[in-house]
Image (cartoon, rainbow, N blue to C red; front, top):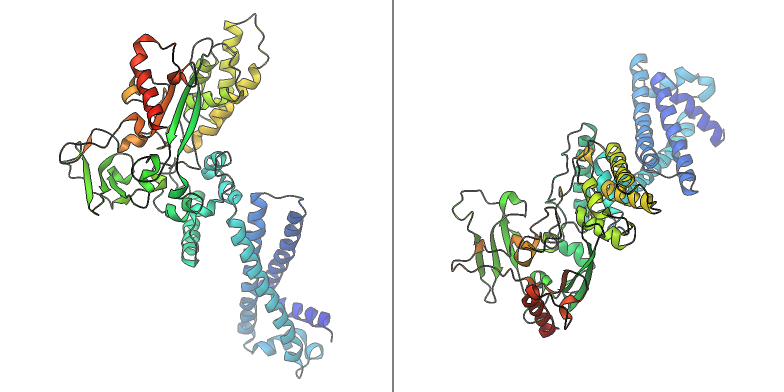
Length: 508
C-alpha cells in the first residue's frame, strides 16, 4: 500500500463517529484556508487587520480544536465498544481492509508524518501570529474603537516609523509574556466594554526611557541651541500674521551653557512625588547636589497635607515629552500651523476666529461635528460676504474639519486637552499673562516644578525665569526677529525688547 493509500486508510479511521468527522473537517479546512489566505496576502490581493486576525488567530485555533477532537472521538469509540483502539479500528474497517499483522506498520508512518506536519504548522502559525501582533497596524486597528484615536495621531507623529512594540514592550521572554498577558486582558476589556473612556494616563508600565528614547537620543547628543519660528495669526478680519521666535537652549551639560536637557545629564538627578501619581501637581521635588545629597523643594500648598505619597519617580524623558508620539493638538495652535502651511487660506476674512469657534464647540458624534463645522463656515461667508466668491473656501473648510477630526473623538470622550502635553507650558506666567496667544488651557509643563509655590526650607524656589530655557527673539510680533531690530520699537514695550535682545546677544 502506497502513502496515499495509507493516508486514505487513516482518514477512514478518523471518521469513526461524528466527533471524528467534525475534528477532521475543522483541522483540514483550517490548514488549507491558512495557506490560501497567506498566499493571497503575499501577492497583495488583500491585506488588512481583520484578514490577519482570521489568518493568524482564528484558523490556527480551529486547526488545534480539530486535532483535540480526534483523540476524543477515538476514546468515545473505544468506550462504546469496550475493546482496545486496535480492535476498534479492526471492527470499523474489517480485517480484510487493514489486517492484523501490518496494522501498525500501515498506520504509524502516516501518524508520524502528520504529527510532524501539525507541529510545524502550529509553530509556524504561532510565529507568524507573534510577528503580526508586533506590527503597529495591528496595535492601532485591531480594536478600532479603543485605539482608533491613538492610531490616528500616531500616523502623523514624529515617531510614526517607530514600531509600537519598541516603546510598549520590553526585550526578553519575560517582557514578551507580560505584554501578551496584558494584551489578553485588553482584548477581554474591549469585548466586554470594560475599558476606560478616555484611556487613562500616564501609563505607569512603560519601558524605561533609557531603553527606548535612549537608543536614538542621549544626553551628549543635546548641545547648543535650536532656533524655532512659530507662525501666529490674530482673530481679526485680516488674520494678522505674527511671529514668535525662540532660541531654545537644548544643552544637557552641567554649568555654563546648560539648558532644557540639564535634567537628563548623567551628572544630574531630579526626583519627585506628585498628587495621585499623575505627574502634574508636584508634592515635592528633589535635586541631587554635587556632594551627592538631595535638596528638597516642597509645595507649600501641600506642606501640611496628610496625603498618602506614592513611590518617588526619577525624572526622565517622558516627564516632559509625555506626548512624544500620540500628540493631540491645542485648537489655536493647530489652526496656526495649518494656516502657516497654506492649508487654510489666510485671505479668508475672519477665518481664524470662525474656524476656532467651530472646532471648540462640543458635538455629540463625529458625523454631527463634521457636518456642523462645514455648515457653520459656509453659512458665515454666505451671509457676511454674499458678493464675494472665495475659491479656497471649500479646501480651507476641509482643513478645519481635518483638525477637529484628528483631535476630537466623542466615542472615547476625547476632547481638547484631554491629554495635555507637558512639553513647554501654558501661558499665564510672567510675560505670558499679557501675551496670551493660546486661548485654551493646556499643561503647566515646565511650571509644574519651576514655580514659586515649590520652595525649600529657606523659601527659595526653582527659577521660573523665561530665559532659563530659551531666548525670546519675538513674541507675537510682526517681525520674526523683532527684538533684534535697532529701531521701530513700540515705546511702552521698549524695556522688554531691550532686555530680550540683550539676553540673546550676551549668551550667543
